Image 1: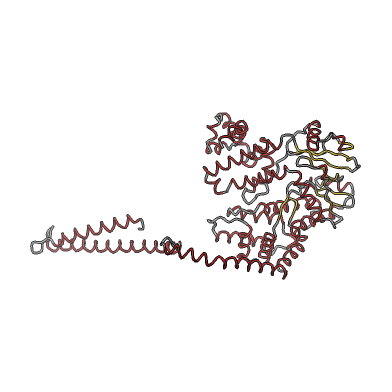
Image 2 (image 1 turned 90 degrees about the vertical axis):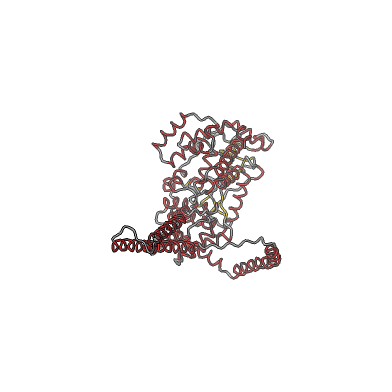
Length: 560
């Protein structure tokens, strides 16, 4: 860790300064980095000024944008995690934009020739110097192959890998430091979150991985003439250069042009939704970032998906959990909803089951008697993740990505056809998922797997019992039984008993005092002697000592 800090000292300083300028200097101070890197007080003053004029979400977004591509990417990916990040911050992270400059054509030419060990002129018949698009990791150019095929070539930015790896090392270093020193960081498992973000960014850096993803999507829609996926030219593709079929169409983010070109927006909207549900509920492999800029509309209302760097995967088990959740919501079964949520996510040990049930009941009541076609998928997903966030239930990354994908698609479709009900289109897919779950073949397979698991348990049982017996013989087995409710009940009984004892002693003491006073009054003397022995005085003294001792014992126990 020390070596990393020394090697990347300037970048560490930039990051710590940025934390401080945007009002998060207290975190760096708690980590001991403020003093270590000699952050000037001026930075704190700047941070305080910013703190008064911006919300927390705005300051986080500005902080990420200032630190460049790695942090922008981390913010964009983090916006898919509403189970661990508050909604108001998610809204700001969704506004993150790649504020990048175009890199010169000389760098493009150099990278291509280094990757293929051939002059660019031998690879392409023509290559346009002006980029079609630019992003934080790379930029896209139009070109024509020697065979005459038109292609789009994505080239990775010079030295972007080195810069991103440096930033990821520092962020992982800071996360480990935070978990070691800050209770909230350990509670929210910051290291795991940063590791997930780092893994996603590294996958985007590998263009060959993106090419493989594109081919998987192409197989999903090979018999669907209304959905196109660009062809990948592997002979012109490496981890830093991706060459794909050029598709000329209209981006969904320019809806006005669709109307001008006489496209049928209702048909386009329906095809987009059907394609997404095909990916999610049937294939279990879906586009993780289907924003309008990544979807083209071609003549004939054909849609084409672009940019496959971020994808989500749903295992058969996860699809079963989703089906269980949908069925439980439809039947208003709170126990089954809670079970489905806990099966889907990682539930902390200290979760309050009663409060979780109450929140689920409230969620169900919100959608009770609401027509199925009128339910907003975006709001329903947000409500589900709000419950997860409130109870610190951590959902799998692919599941939160699924939620983000559904939210994005609903926003896209709302602009194309406001009357279209996404959840109505999803209904037949959901029914198919439920039928698939209860299909005899799948049920039989599940039973077979369970028998296999039980078989392993029974095989291990003799050895386990032998180990337990050995431990018991050595006297090393410790059994601890706790019953929080019973313990609370006993404490209350103890308190009542002590108070009753106190009252009885107090009453006895009062009776003795009354007897002393009456006896003294009848004799007309200030002291009473019986056969020359001060019986009443001695009894009074003993009662007083007993009372004080009992009073001291009760108060000392702390259970009065």
